Length: 329
Image (cartoon, rainbow, N blue to C red; front, side):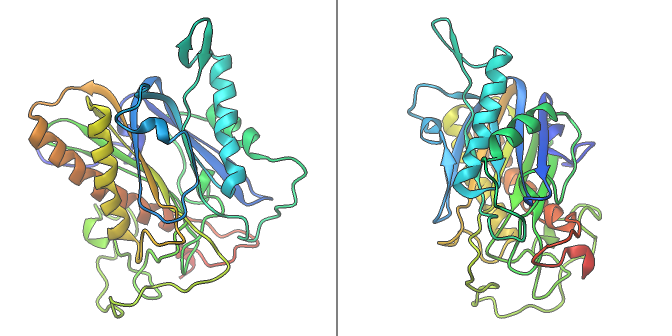
């Protein structure tokens, strides 16, 4: 048996996972939620210099609560952290959450990217993100769109519009790994002015254009970006059906950051809040813990690189975009 993408090439190829998106095209922002019918063992690893997140401290391996009810990615900078509140309120109404006496407390970590100066109208009288989070939860299903949707609605990169991306891989062990990412990087996803992607060596089929690697490259010692008024951040989730502990999930999230570095140049900058959540459903036991976790980590990195390129590739032109989309090159 060889490794191959799942049937949808989405993070929801991990059995039991659902993803929902909600966006406001006037504001040019949105939110994305991932959840399953049962709580997920989860962890996080942060490598960017300017992160924005909620409830990430409880994801450390030494903390009491090891599982979460949902994970949220959102635009909006600090305002966007309220998207997780909308998800938590809706889950509580469904009877979901950590049991404390006769109360249920949904555990909903979230992360945000900066999209406040991306061409949208940000003159709201009421923070829209709680509403967007609740709408994203209502939209959750096995199938979902990529590109200019959800948390990727107003995302940008150094040269092109960013977007929401996803990819999956089934390993010879039978385990499935999937990535979900909102690409809003200070760096570039394409070589020079494009259209070739840095992630091209990891592409399967023509999942982001099928152009193959570039034939010429800029000086690799100089970053493919420039400082501007834009702040950024790429935020993602790596998920698997493997039975992992919280410590093993932490290692999975750490390995997945290699995907950022393979697909974005530069990555993990002082102006990015690059963050990856890891989530495990626990449905498939590990046959060989040492070998399986090595393969899972490698798959996490390659899936994340592919998901980043797919998110940028799928972005669609819209009025007010500050940058062109890949499709317009």
